[in-house]
Amino acid sequence: MKTAIIGLPMVGKTSLFTILTGVHDATRVGQMEVRVGVTKVPDARLPELAKLFQPPKVTYATVEYLDFPALSKESLANPSYVASLRQVDALAHVLRVFASDSVPHEKGSVDAVRDAEDLDVDLALNDLVVIEKRMERLDKDRKKLKDPKLDQEYLLLERFQKALEENTPLRNLEITAEEEKLVRGFNFLSLKPMLYVLNVGEEDAARMHEVEAEYRATALGNRPRTAITAVCGKVEAELAELGAEEAKELMGSYGLADSGIERLISATYSLLGLMSFLTAGDTEVRAWTIPMNSKAPQAAGAIHTDMEKKFIKAEVVNWKTLVELNGYPGVREKGLLRLEGKEYIVKDGDVLVIRHS
Image 1 (cartoon, rainbow, N blue to C red):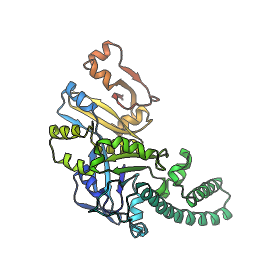
Image 2 (tube, one colour):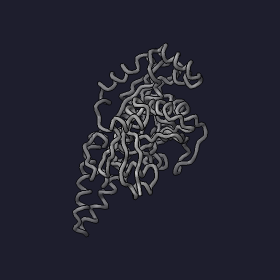
Image 3 (cartoon, rainbow, N blue to C red):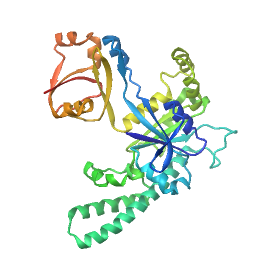
Image 4 (cartoon, rainbow, N blue to C red):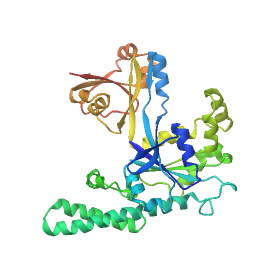
């Protein structure tokens, strides 16, 4: 799944993308030249399992980011830009929180809430154009055909239109799975999950969690399909140049247990509705990505499509139990290795062994 990193000029968007992915070169996505990069999802469980099984290979889950050109009235009026943006699964909007006399804000002052709400208006206007065109077509089709599905779609789009005209992003609405399926093909921009990335100054690097809490108390907080995370681009740039021990020492000097980049990646993964189950053995320890609330056969399908088709049962144990009991012999001895069937909903951190025909 793809997440677009977007933001106004000079907010630190591209620097964060480079730190995240290490990618410098652009590639074509639709009609746009954007930079595309993949990064590992931090997962402290994998090193623990690797210590136990000593495999030659450890594989992390990944997320894909796209660095889009800076936001502007011109870019959001560009059909190629908007069409490419519609193809992603989520948006990570980098908002400038840091102050700098040498880097003027293009709107004259630093106001992250204003910048976020301004973008919501622009996304809503783009979605309204799509909705109005579709409703015009539906009006004609409904006169010719008596189809309840056309009526259902029209009423839903009418509801969307009203919300957007009141400057309410579609992601803020309560939408059923059936309704979401009905409009999935439109790829509405304001319906996409939104991660607000607060780029703070070095003076706030030690209080990023406090900054996040402050912004969750604003109009940006408590919204559906929305998350807020803070990073300090300047500190992250320094960390990217250091070895593991030096980086740990620098984070300690700011009182940080983890880097802002790691939390950004984890927030993206969660916002996309994804989770990881694990496999562990002598050849590989690996995190596999599946949607939350997936059943065991779907998890098997993430490993190989044939496993989903030929699924019989899954041996399941929590990763921590597996580590604490020093592997499968200890788990079996304690009777903690469960055998689950097709209806089992896989939990984040489950270690699975798939039985198939």
